[in-house]
Length: 257
Image 1 (cartoon, rainbow, N blue to C red):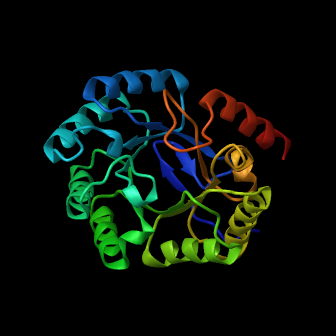
Image 2 (tube, one colour; image 1 turned 45 degrees about the vertical axis):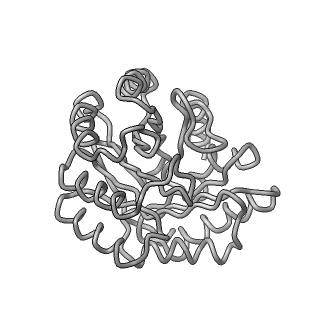
C-alpha cells in the first residue's frame, strides 16, 4: 500500500482517489472570450476547471477579476475551480509584479469563489505559509507547484521539491518538467511513484511536458498523479491533448488495472 492516504473531495470529485481527474484550463484574454470558453468547456465535461488568469488582459484589475469570477462561478457551478496566476518565470503568460499577484490570490481566497488556488514553490516559504493560512480560514485548498520548462531535474531533486511543498503545508503538491530525452520522462514517472509509495501524505500532480511527455499525461495516474490536464479551446502548457482523448485512455487504463 502506498504511503499517501489522503483524498481531497470537492463537489464530488476525488483528487487522490482511484482514477485521475481531468482538469481543463481557461486561457482567454477578454471577458467575452472567457465566457465563450467556459460555455465550450461545459460540453467537454472535465472533472475540474482551472482559470489561468495570467492570460487575462485585465488581470491587474483585481476588482474586475473578482466580479468576473463571481459570474464564472455561477456558470461553472458544478465544477471545482482552480485559480492560478502563474508567475512568468514558470510559464506565466505575462510578467505581473509579485506584490500585486499575491494580493490578487489572497483576495480571491477571501471571496470564496474558488475551490483551489495554485501558488509556486519559488514564492518562498513565508508567503506560502501566509497564503495557506488564509486558505485554511476560508476552506480553500492550496496546490504548491513547481515548473521547469527547460529540463527535467534529477529524480532526487523532483522528489525533494514535492516533499518540500508537502512540508510547507500544501494540500496538493505539483511538479511539471520538460523532457529532453525519453529517459527524462521515465525519471519523472519514477519520482512520482517513489514519492507516492514512500513519502506522500497528500495528493500529487506530476507531468512531463511536450509530445515526448504525453504518456505521463495519459498514464500518470498509474504512477500516482491525481490530476492531468486536457486542452479545451486552447492548451495552457506544451503537450496537452483534447479532453475526450484523454478520458478514453484513462478509462481504458482504469478498467484494466
